Image (tube, rainbow, N blue to C red; front, side, top):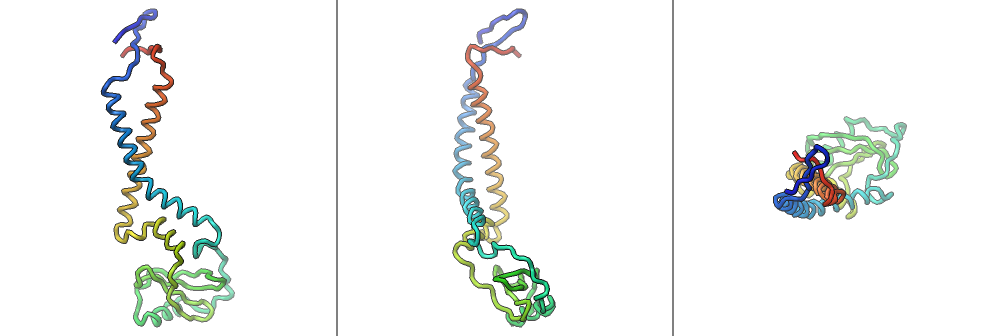
Length: 192
C-alpha cells in the first residue's frame, strides 16, 4: 500500500481489501435472507397488534371494572357449575372473575383445550364459550402463534433469534456503509 509521511507519523491510504468486500457481500445476502424470513411473521404480528389497538374490534378488548356488588356466586359454586356443564370433574387451571358483555362472569379454563366455560356470577348459569369471530381468531393466531400448537414456544424463539440476527447484520451493514461514506479515498489514517 502506498505510504505517506506527515511529519514523523506514518499513514496508510485506507482501501477496502477483497476479503472485506467479499464478507460484506455475504453478510448483505444473509441480511436479505433473514429479512425475508422474519418479515412474514413480523407483518402478521404487527397487523394483529394494530387490530387490537382499534376499539371494539377484538372480543375482550374492552376493559370494564368488576361490579363486585353484583357477584352472587362463589368461586366454588362456579367451578361446580362448570363441572356440571362438562359432565365431569374438570382439571380447572384458572378461574377468573371478569366483566363480559356488561355482566360479571367467571371464566373456567382447563380440561377443554382452547375452549373455556363462562359462569354468570349473578345467576350461576354456565355456558361454553362461543367461537371467536374471524378478527379475534386472526389476532390470537397471528399474535400469539396459537396455530403452532406445541411448537408455539419454539417458533417464537426461532423467529425472535432470526429477528435479532437480522437487526445485528443490519447494524453491521450500516456501520460499514456509513464509515465508508465518510472516509474519502484521499484521507489517510495512521498505520498499525
